[in-house]
Amino acid sequence: MNEAAIVFDNVSRFYGDVLGVNGVNLSIPPGVTSLVGPNGSGKTTLMNLMTGLIRPTRGTVSVRGIPPDRPHELFRVVGYCTQFDSFPKSFTGYEFLFSYLLLHGMRATEADRRALEALAQVGLLEAANRKVAAYSKGMRQRIKLAHAIAHDPRVLVLDEPLNGLDPMARAETIALFQQWGEQGRHVIVSSHILHEVDRISDQVILLSHGYVVAEGQIQGVRSEVSDHPIQILVRCLRPAALASRLFEQDHVVEARITDDRRGLAVRTRDADRFYLLLNRLVVESGLQLESVAPVDEDVSSVYQYLIGTQGGAS
Amino acid sequence: MSWKDLAAMPWDLWRRQVAAIQRLELKKNLWTLRAWWIYLLALGPVILTGAHTVIELYRPHGNTLAEDSMVFAGMFQLFYLRLGIFFGCVGIFTNLFRGEVLERTLHYYLLSPVRREVLAVAKYVAGLAAAALFFATSVAASFVLISLHLGTEFREHVFRGPGLEHLTWYVLVAVLACAGYGAVFLFLGMVFRNPMLPAALVMIWEGINPFLPSVLKKASVIFYLKSLCPVSLPPKGVMALIAVETAPTPAWLAIPGLMLVVAAVLAYAAHRARGFEVSYSE
Image (cartoon, rainbow over the protein chains, first blue to last red):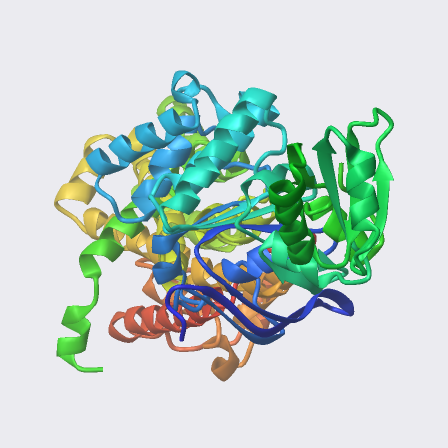
């Protein structure tokens, strides 16, 4: 059993006749992993499976070597920020966390310290003694995040964690995800807002209708989509001259000068050869480059190429 | 499993986790609006017996101690056991898990590192503590209030006669009733999406108990509870004609037997809790 990864081994889950996910085989390494797909694609089902809130109809799941049907072990290492927006009645933000930490078996002094630390981390210290029922949507989202991180887990499962957050809080939260990922934790984030996860993910898992359609580092996934040549935007002083050299190459499908005539949009079937050629041109013919950037090496484009839809992406 | 294995279990952790669950559940069972009608069930007889004692104080020839004892015995068996504690336990125990599903809060527990078996037992104990607090207090208060108008005679009965022993048995039977019915309704709340229909069937079964053959009588909670009551109520009138006489079960058998049933139901509940899934859409 792989004790460093989250492993799905041929996992299927059906809700009666309705498919949740089917035939999922995954091995998720530490770092930030995004589950991407439109509503109903199976993101939450995968998260519920890895946290034991639902059981697979077929196959097995293990989280760092722990099967999810052992919650007393699992939730020592896992924190889950769910989409459920209901809270035990009459709790304040502090009580919500404090009581949860007591359920871990912590003593009151330690639970108190950790609850306050978690509240501080999500910027809710001032609202700690207000009833959760009176919190705004953004505050409820943040208290759920605090709930997920309060016991300092090694695996964070975060279902649409940026929903309802204002831009400032989003930026802070994304920075937190990156920080946790860099610490060697598993940070599993689901989102249907593709440009958000693009910025933070070490790897992505693309889902559609209950199936994993692609997984891995986004560049790797992108390069496998061979029927859609990679688009690269080259900003330079003499785009026409560059274009004439590029047309000699068999891997270049298209080279189009941009409207401002200071850039060249290139579509190539072999990005590696293209970059080598560009290096050679710079050295040999003194080509002056302002910037070189892939245009469609993002989750949104990959998703569109693979699924043929933006999939609810915005 | 050996004693060594048992000793190696994390009892201290479980104790702290059970205490944390008690803290949440007692708050929920005692201090929420959901409990108002259980307060009413427990307070009703207290108010009635209080009113009785006030009226008796002004009556020239009021009830005797023996009459009050029989009235209380009737109230205990017909109201407390068959209605008050029964429905109180329906309200408390069927909601231990089902209520969490309806309020969409079960995941709060299921996302914590608490063994599901510990959760089931802790919830049951919290329900029992709340039910026992409601009804043991009510029984004790009613027992005192119903004969308070007798003054010295009642004090003598309690402190020098069999009164205190009777009171102890009534309270014990009330607590056992909470334990027995609690286990039954915890089970129904875990097995059925709508536990009210099976609860109604249990009520009918317990209600027709006096008319059942002796063998079937023993497959109920009320039979053992009645066996333990300190003052027996012989059937009268038509009831005497159709009721089936069965020798009461002695306390040394009735109490462990009831506890055995509770333990079996709890073991099943704990086993079932292991397979819990969060599916609020049901």
